Image 1 (cartoon, rainbow, N blue to C red):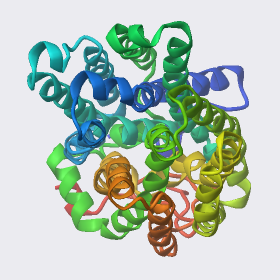
Image 2 (tube, one colour):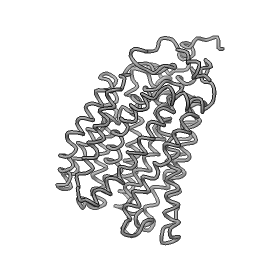
Image 3 (tube, rainbow, N blue to C red):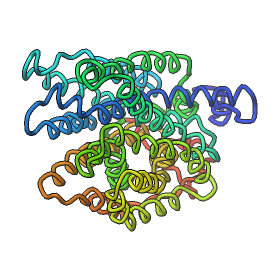
Image 4 (tube, rainbow, N blue to C red):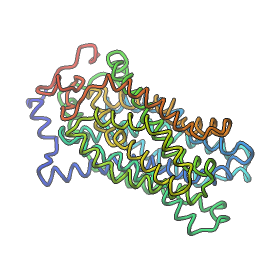
Length: 464
């Protein structure tokens, strides 16, 4: 065992936010975390904004839009498996090593979409290859998001976890906005024929340099002080399978609580961000450019507000943020979707309001979810809970919304679907422990009652 105490180990490793060196290290941690999330969501932004071109290239025919939405949804099929594999590995060998691999897989799979031959060239192989790349992207994302959020949360000071963690979600919307804006600029600069033939490929190819930049940033960082503390005190033992068993046996309540909250979070997320361009074009007959403008304006407003809500949550707590967001969306979803159907200007107003109501959830993900689990199962707990719920309800939201709207002509269905998800989220929120300001060090579930004073020892069965 080391001669140093746990407190000495942590103080030596943790950045001091009041010193220039500590602030620099925190900024590097933000960049290393956020770039992977931005790359992941850049892919989703490009895919959503270029969905019309993808339909023409890979899914010609009467059910083309459904095929494109299936291509979006199928990327979520292997996210739970990715979480189950990457998460326990990240809890055993560290967050940094896993995050280096996932960002390469995400950016590589996205870039390869830009090189695929079309249905006109190779027939059915074109959509098959597209779906295969989406599966690879989903598998890697299963380890990326939970790891990045854990990495950021474990670097951030306890009393500023909301503030610093919010920049991970700033990366989310920066990536999504960047993807949307890139497609919009190409639409404005190229002819429709050029976009159909080759212009849509360019944004996908751009993901590769983003991934390489992210890999470089992550290679410059050490693993998190919270993880290194346990590792140096020999509290991380056994195998990745040990970490997985420990999670499933001993932490069912936070798994189920997070599952319910993620249903609400991601039905809203993928309805508002991924499905919205298709909805605006097919339902209220906006042009491709107008739909992109509505989305881009709403996303920019949301992106600007994320740091504010993250900072606010450090003083008010995470639960009030979530209660306000879930209640607001539940009450106003249908009126705002009705307003969205009244024309271009009203669509902007309605979408911005929906985005502002949603942001308190998004801004506090990195502060809320990692704090629901102790260090030795945190990566796996986040990755598995988040990705199972996302695969079942979030990633399928565009497909479900599109199928119901097309077959029933009920244009307000996305609002009703969002309301149902918010109701589930409110039930789960009743079981969430408030952790604003609490330490997330050690091997006990963080809470105000169990706030860190001395590194607690893992139970014998957890070390097996």
